Amino acid sequence: MEKEKERDMEREIEQARMYFRCGKTKEASWRKLQLEGLLKFVAEREDDIFRALKHDLGKHPLESYRDEVGPLFKDINVALDSLTSWMLRKRIKLPIVGFSTTAELVPEPLGLVLIISSWNFPLGLSLEPLIGAIAAGNTAVLKPSELAPATSALLADALPAYVDNEAIKVIQGGADVGQLLLQFKWDKIFFTGSKQVAHMVMTAAAKHLTPVTLELGGKCPAIIDSLSSWRFERKILLKRIISAKFGTCSGQVCLGIDYMLVEDKFAPALIELLKATTQEMFGENPRESFNVARIINKDHFDRLKRLLDEDGVQASVVYGGSMDEDKLYIEPTILVDPPLNAAIMTEEIFGPLLPIIRLKNIEGSIEFINSRPKALTIYCFSTNDKFMRKVATDTSSGSLVFNDTVVQYAAETVPFGGVGESGMGRYHGKFSFDTFSHEKPVIRRPCLPDFWFRYPPWNNYKLELFRLFFIFDYLGIVLAVLGLKKPRPLSKSI
Image (cartoon, rainbow, N blue to C red; front, side, top):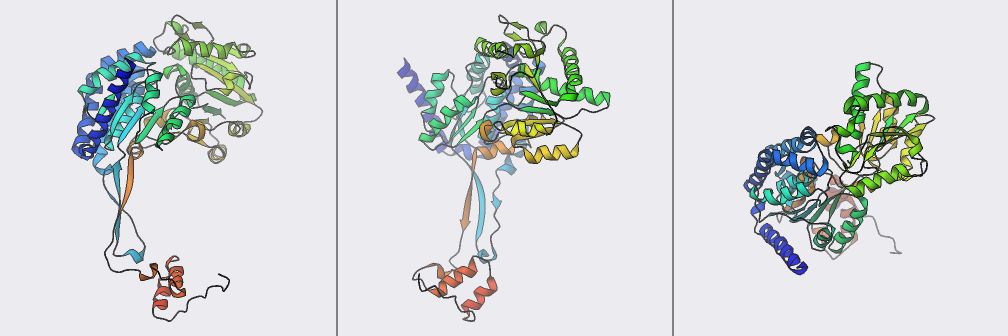
């Protein structure tokens, strides 16, 4: 049975590969038709999408629309409106000596690409990269996460009716299927997930020298230097913080706040404000609320429970902490100064647990962040321009956001991606198109003029012309050709 399954997979992959070679995907009309199909899928299957995301993660339809459905509508329409301009050839400026030569950059598709998506945004993280792959003219195999089975089944069962199913394949399965897919030769692998699996992806890609985009994560800090003195502004900023941590897939999101850094003297007031805002947003009994997503499965629930149960961690809880294993629910939880060597401060949390680390002075936050792996995002809340400039220049991260959270993901004109251990490559909007394209230089040259000195036999005269040529000394070249400039002699020792 396994051999038959493997043969079926190989047949599907080969069909997509051969379809790319026929050249149809290079046509703008084909690309637009597929993007229109994706748009129709999201529109017509909206209720099915809401049901699937509720089943897999307990997401409220509004959260599902805000984080997955809405951005897809926006980004597909952007791709449709911009496709013609994205596909245009770009003229390359050449030096004066190349006056008779023309050069241009031609964006061309890479070929057959593999997209492996994650479970926390199982629809958005499947279709967002697919938009770029299609717009760039590739064929694609999509492997949705098996940890979000309802969404995975919806994509596998429904999507083929909306797009060219000879060119775009959805293959379901667990880790074994993922490992099997990685054994095939691809022209690009786009992976969203954990660093542990990313190691396996890169190892498999190296076998065929396949380029990869890795969208990972890490521990994204939020520096709280100060909040506005105006009450209504302060309330907005607090909502942005709490929503990014607890209101986005219950903290199971790579670009959410992982932990906070705050100056010791400001910490007591901030903690009370965070408690009050959390209760205001999710109610006195969030367990019965439909406003908090559920933990994806028991394995992840147990992992988060172990983080809280570690020595010294439970004692640092100042708000929340209750759990319901049957409902896969963990209450939004705030901790103050858990041990820095505990797993909650060394591993990505990916759940509704918010550690707050107090510092003697907020300038120490930069050293604290720089002593750890580079984050996907750094958030900084401050009104101090000098401090904000220092954070911008003295830290490195995939992105940096001042006085807001998560908004960088929603803007298609802003590239989304990590640096270092938080990922490599970027996408969204035109950046997705570029990720799945190769800009091929195309150069056209006539026979004349010809630079005769580039051919053997060699002599000092030709060497002098090269010296002048590579520093763009056009007058010197003319003088040398006319015999008015003598070549510099070579050393006798050469």
